[in-house]
Length: 186
Image 1 (tube, helix red, strand yellow):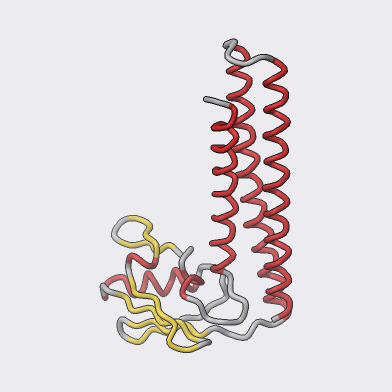
Image 2 (image 1 turned 45 degrees about the horizontal axis):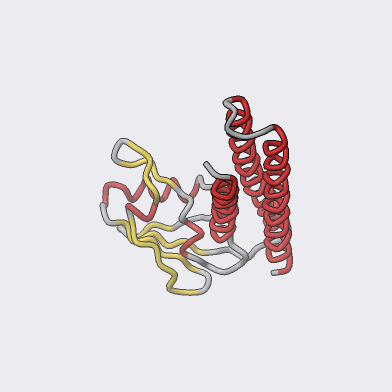
């Protein structure tokens, strides 16, 4: 693998960790209803664990209400339970196959809890970036051991990988700070 393609691949993987973080942050509410709020929820159904959007249609008819139209009557209770136990502080109300999820106002305590959740998501993203760095450095060490690259090249590329890692972690920290400001301001 050439030096450029190695660095591009590692950069792409680190960007992927940032994209996952942004998607997770999109699911955290800041006072408005959003269908993406329920995306991370998985439901125990049909002998396995399935994303909620594979069992129901999630829509936002009002700014403070999410409706979940469950397709199979047998899974309504499981979907309701998954929403209640998701840790998002939601209290769904079931009416037949429709589950209404009112979005309560964010109080100060709930905002603090959400900032803890954002910190947890950001740390998972940092760990992903560090794992990508570790994989890249292990590859370089193998290449040097096999005589594919010199020790100087290995050190230079290791420095480049560390620079990519520092940049990715800086962007994760900026995204975290922005989301925390958004949560605490609302």
